[in-house]
Image (cartoon, rainbow, N blue to C red; front, side):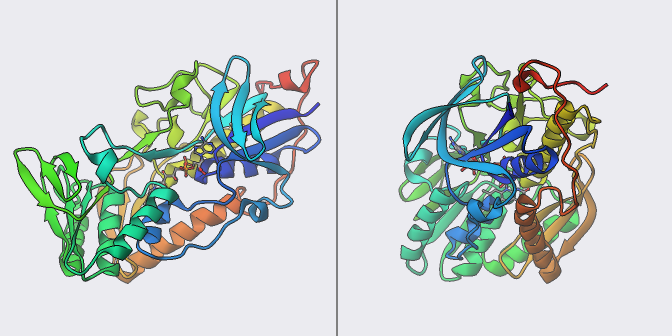
Length: 398
Ligand SMILES: Cc1cc2nc3c(=O)[nH]c(=O)nc-3n(C[C@H](O)[C@H](O)[C@H](O)COP(=O)(O)OP(=O)(O)OC[C@H]3O[C@@H](n4cnc5c(N)ncnc54)[C@H](O)[C@@H]3O)c2cc1C
């Protein structure tokens, strides 16, 4: 009997975990099933590009996983029962249930309206493809001189404002942020950001806490009003509620609490990776929801699962940061170098070289989904059978 591994979600983290597991384990011993709502890989890091009319390269999973041994299941996950070890799915053929021996939870995240009045009704968002396509259609209908207000001064907000301003110089683009522009960057990084935003004609509203959104405006604390034909909400991501509805130990925001091998601290048969996981990095700080953390968490989980099944050595690779890569349109960029725990240092890379660097990072992230062992040849190892059924064969290495 094969050990049944089910990976939920084929984003940067889940797709990498599934592919890496299939390359590390022998097909006769382990069956790796990847469940995803969509039949193709969505490059979330390019959603601001999609929203501004750029067309992204199609990446069908059928091609990406051809010959890898990963079995694809296109279906929506509707629930997880960690006691019965089952996943409820709804697909083209109706509802069903999948049983697992090991589960990798990687359902990612979506936008976070944060309960601010009017946001859910009136704002646009770019956390995923449906939102980006909706904004794309709306932007295409905007006439010259109309105002687009991007709310949120994080990396997604900066990238969105710059992309919209560069693509549509006839629009009036503004960014509202609770703090100061680029306040998590180094002085050099902040300076560059201001220069590029100035060149692109982006109006910046600093120390502006948005308290409400209406069809034609954004309201800020203290009674301020910013006219907005379109409001784009980018104030952070929220994880899907499915994990919170299970018996898994989760944080208040619904992320699954995991140990250094990405294994759930409450349910040893469950691993969580990417945005869905609450994992800590250097300095015991929570990892940032990002593609930058998603890939390494997936490698860690896949290698730990393979090690526990085969009696191999557990991976112990610290997950650290190197830089924050920010696109500022297609011609400009900002690479802010950071400490291992993600604090800005003095060094930055700017200009066209930074734009090119960021483009290569995005391409590399998509490439690593199709090449989860980073192109290195891997010897598939046999599962060590210590129980009557393969389902109970998970063994801690000596
Ligand atoms: C515009 C934008 C720019 C960004 N730029 C950067 C950047 O420059 N650098 C960086 O590090 N990060 C960036 N990020 C963040 C990064 O995209 C996410 O942190 C990353 O995608 C998380 O990866 P993940 O695999 O955990 O989740 P996701 O990529 O969200 O993947 C989750 C997968 O699960 C599937 N799924 C969800 N729910 C269900 C369900 N119920 N049933 C079945 N399938 C389901 C989804 O379809 C998806 O395939 C950006 C995000 C956005 C929106």
